[in-house]
Length: 115
Length: 114
Image (tube, rainbow over all chains, first blue to last red; front, side, top):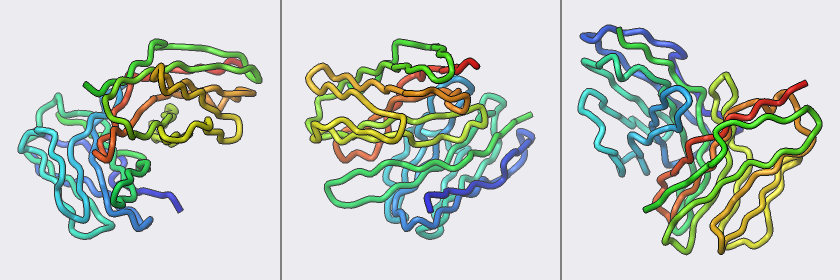
């Protein structure tokens, strides 16, 4: 099973709202990722968690706050977003082993619109 | 700098024909992993094929195969017997070393025509 699930599929929020995106995988992967993707552009890496610890933060604004409650779950908390934050938010996961980096499997994404 | 270049923004192919998508990359790492991902209109990112740089043999997955030229830093994707369902944006990507950071090219939009 190579499935990564994301909820919700669509989200519309105002600039003063607080919302959360959720991602779940049951593949036993120990690395999880958040990406932001604008239309017709490649995904841009936001955060990487490895063994439930934040290992990479690509200088993302503090209005995006990631959380990894356990090895299967990854959340992205949103607060005071701007209209330019409207995008497709993709979650991915991969195996992690010493000396080896594995391919990433992506979820279907959450389409976020900030009004 | 670690970069990926896809020089063909858009391509089209007739159903059942063969098409090749180009990709070049730049890295100073000796060990890295290369991938092609497909993103259809649904925007689900799907892994098509993977290649480990230390393996000389080109990877193949059913109708998809790659031509990996390590010295030239080239990693092209060949799609044989193209099908309408192959219509998508294709991203070439690689992970340098063990960074875990997936670096994407700008993508090639492929349209398969009936």
